[in-house]
Amino acid sequence: MTPDERLDQLEPLISEALAVLDRHTAQLKQHTAILHQHTSSLNQLVAIAGQHSDSIGFLLQGQAELKIQQDEMNGKLDLILNKLG
Image (cartoon, rainbow, N blue to C red; front, side, top):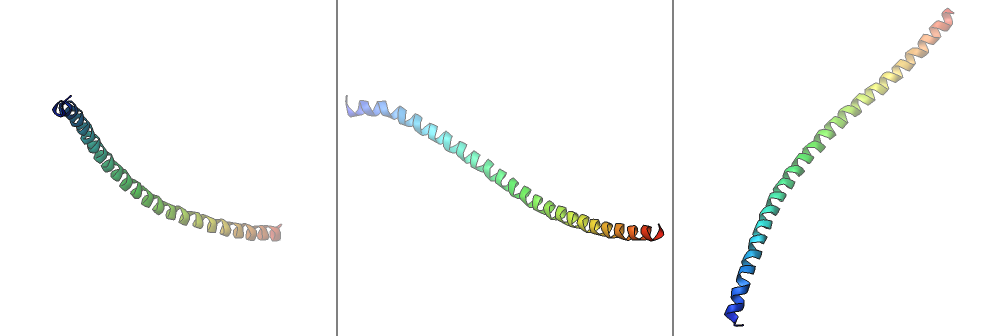
């Protein structure tokens, strides 16, 4: 087989392989763009969760304070009822 015949056999294979590589490169670029979008969305969700976490913590602290005040009032009410009874 002559070098030209070998080249004629290899040329279509190389061309096909390069076409496949080009398609894969394009798909990887699309996937990278989608991954970037998802990363941005996830960062926004984490920020929102952080804000809500602070709000929930604030509410829970307020609830704990109300429970303490309620317990104090119950104690005072028990004293009053004992004095009346």
